[in-house]
Length: 267
Image (cartoon, rainbow, N blue to C red):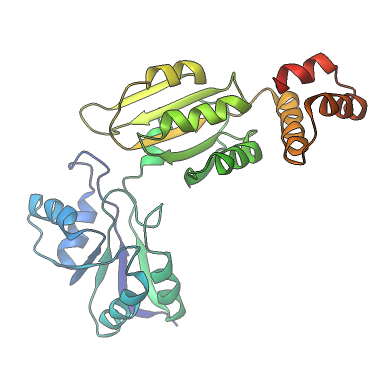
């Protein structure tokens, strides 16, 4: 039987401070404690809505030590809300470790709907079909980016990236799919919000100068499936030390692909 200790997951605005639900304000006022990533960030929101609730820190560097603290608060009859600096907790933000422990102890958990950069972004991006794959933050190394894109090139691939890495990340993807279409969202819900949807080359050129703000990206599903498949096989043979001439001979023989076509991908 579920115990009546109450834990709330509360989304907060991703940019515009007005993007918070009436219910979220109500819950943040009624709970005894708000667990937050950065009290300085959360306090600005609380002050704006005249919320006097006390806060405690809960972030990725103290998750394990704070699990028992929050569990004890709940077991003592306190009501606790979890917020992140912006958006919905557990969507690329801390919370999973805590929730696992709370569920083991049958503590009642309620999640409120609200702000999320992914849904806000995708609602402005026209696409064929509703399917997409969200992978959180894009990995940092060139190889990781190549690998994750190659595995998901046939999906509408959605991810977060930092403004200082965006162009580099897109150039790595461009090497694999030079004609792919891309959508980039920046500064969502803020004064200088920007959504750019274009070829990857044009998007790279558009963001070639220094940019600021949180970034959400969707790489549209690739239509060039056959060439991408050949490119993958080329990369495998390159990694194993085969020379370009040998690669074109092998792939031409195995897959009945014109050698010139293979060479155009190789060079």
